[in-house]
Image (cartoon, rainbow, N blue to C red; front, side, top):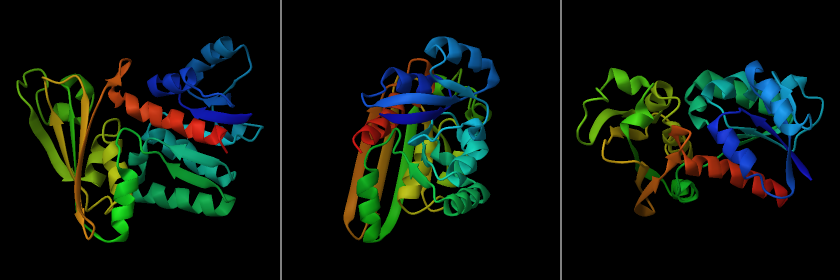
Length: 260
């Protein structure tokens, strides 16, 4: 039986818990103190509720971050320094160059392993293959409903209450998008890390009052030719900022662990 540590206890973590595949069991959940009593009651003490990674006395086979870019910054280095395998869904955290270097140093020091999950977008394997032949251009567009952008930097760029048609409200690099929209633009970072990098990947963010889906469009051109991919996914009912496929990407990481 493989044992997993979850970082986070929000909407995505709940999906992972509900869909945990056979052969994998939850051993630890790193979460805010206010969740600890609920975690102990739910799992009857069989799952440890932790405030810090270093409070863990066991050794998880996989540490799965399902929380936020802030959680990657807070816990990532400690996980890697202990030689554990960390799978990250909030890839936008790596837009912070200093954090990326800190994680790399911890990984080397502890012989840990860092995996960046594909999250809400498809085609990352193809993008990485295309990179081997040289990529000329990679662009990514995110189209979401007003509800998906509420509480984000978008509210400073566009009136989400009055928008009546699809509009682009942000254009810039993947690094800018990931840092300005930490809860919405992790896909931009995932695309960037798989392709031409944070600063060269061009990003457009759109609000569309007519949609109930999160639509991700990826276009790449290079020595291989070019491809365009569009994925129209449903957001999690409990958190419209998060695509269901992103949560399922984390579930898939658990299934792959069970098959090892």
